[in-house]
Image 1 (cartoon, rainbow, N blue to C red):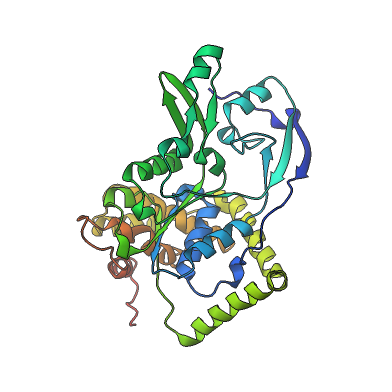
Image 2: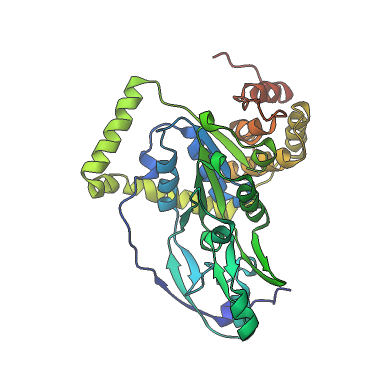
Length: 368
């Protein structure tokens, strides 16, 4: 059971910033094209309950660059000093048990501000490396729960990125998706159980030529973004010039986009705060479910994710009501990967989703 936490009475409110280290990161606002991928990532940051995003596309299309740029864009968060789980100082659902115990004992909790972390999960990672391990010998001899945190602990309140997720062992993908959905990671060894918060935005990327995830796993990603190599010669030149300018003088390039980065960061913060105020009209919710039903989408994840993504988009645009346009911008990303029944079948490009959406919502077909 969670103790009632009166954080304002017990937490030391003097917050110091963490020392910033690391190299310059390509700014998110300077990335040309790939609007679908960028939108999916932003919406998952606004509402992590959307359930993460799977990004599939050609090699060399900026998947990793965009994800790292997003992390650098995010505002700093307050965490408890020396806590391996990046515990929130006020929210019990984002605290480790040790922090809760300290608050219950009226201890002061020192706080530090730190950039949101992005954790890379290597393809060769073991389950112990991902989930953490319990030192059974120490637990038995000293009577304490000796827990060595894994990557899920480090990713709490941040992003967990798996490149080439379609090549990752299915069992590990299942573990990641379970933690992402529940917000908690539980490790059990020899009758000893440790639980800690693990609420993160799961981002997977891969090249479809190397194979797809099984439909049962793919369905559990909230959104699916498709990206393709830019064909327009002018856009390709612009992308090359942007990258060259950044490589030659990173600081000057970052300064050029500083104002845009700050504006987008403020917009994200406002959207996170206003998300709970956004409403979806009942008729629109019925039509979303009608689209899912006509597409023969298994389960209710498609309905739930589409509603959440549309609300996140409305909040991002500064609105309190979800519009048909909001739904139209997100529904393909929320449903396209839920249509497969045969593991050997390729993912629908989204045309089928668009056609059903237009018919159900009474919109005219757009000729391309």
